[in-house]
Length: 299
Image 1 (cartoon, rainbow, N blue to C red):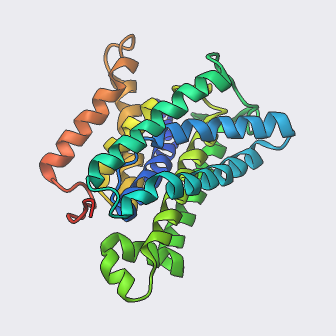
Image 2: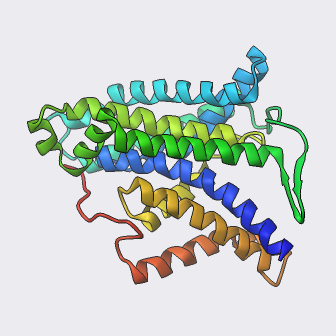
């Protein structure tokens, strides 16, 4: 029982980080109708931004997380205005292809730039807090506990923002119908900028939270990007709540699957297989995902 509890708690912690990453990707997709293939690179950039804020400015690790989110929000806003915005005009005819090319180009640019600027060797920021929490059979490092708590706070804050604020409701209105939203006075282009900035900030925040747990590297965003795509399909394309539920579910399934695999030497190699299996089973039962909506495409 104690082994199951340990696996479940670790899966929950990782699942919350997954959920944070996927929520940002889902927000961008639901509002802009753009699949951001550069989301993993933004995750990586957030980790390094936090690292340099902490080590160069000698600030507390949690301030580094907040600083990384602010930096990535600004980066996302600038990128959306300079690179994504032309897609909304008549200058771009093949909008779907344009969105794929520019966001995939963002991945290539940031990954290679990261290798040049940050170097090929792994870096590790200082921990949020040293030591472990011991509760009976449960042993949990404080780093993971703090990362999980901050992820929960960010996800709750995002949910409240989307449901309870005028700006959040405007984003939801644009995600459902940009024409109808424009009729009632909402500027869709402004919402695109806000959504891309928020999505980038959430990716950066996830990268910054995971930084003290795993080492930083220029390729650290590759795997989370794949997992985020699995999660948004699993949770339902365009559903922020679905991405949160999907992220937590994926984290639990991966952790328990790896922990109970009969061959422990190969267990980690099968981590992605558990996610793929979960996705296949879910889509067989619910083709639109757990909380999917069936209206989303580029316009």
